[in-house]
Length: 336
Image (cartoon, rainbow, N blue to C red):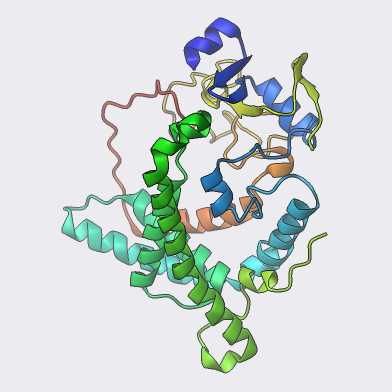
């Protein structure tokens, strides 16, 4: 992709089988597409059959076509699940998850001569918080790990396949489709019991005194639901039946945006050396939460959870970090 960018510039067309993609790798073009012309580029491209099944026919916040359904889903999530008031209600859940994370890190450190896998433990803590916010019921560690493993299977099932780009090859991928449907069945069998349990708790709160008073799931039981158009981007005509893809390294490695972009600099954002608007409204330098109308609604939640998590770890542990053979010349973004 880097070679194509050098040859054809920051915007070019790439055809993969039956799909046509417009690749953009320039901060100004990304800002034009996602902020200045956000409404035009706010929808989602057509999905392969497997993704359509897992997204309930594009009836999720991240998959829904830009329009009334998406607006209702997002509004419901932001107002009823991710507002400051709701986040405060889950303070005890966050503290419990942080305590569990510290216990796991200490146990791992004792068993491995002080060496721990911080990212794995931090990810598990966040997953515990999200499950509590979603279902509002207490889960033991074994159940959480089971759901975590199931979700990893879902992500694997959603990986692109060759027949996504060349449907004529579909008959040769019947086993993969069956495997994906088996994962979908497992997902339903795993999640539905928690949905039913939450319904019963709402009807009779006394059956589980440990249950949270609120969960995001509660807002979905009575949810009411209230084409993109051709556009220009960088002076080029963009038809409606193409995917617009952003090549992130073209931005993160741009020396016009970052000083020494290939250098690992832990102090890059301290003491006013460099800054970046994570929302992308004032300009694009990084896109950790998406941009424009489709920006991740969990940005504030991630900020709250992240700061609490790092404070908890750093207040209790002394961490020595050794970087060996770090190669930042990659075709994907590495977050350190």
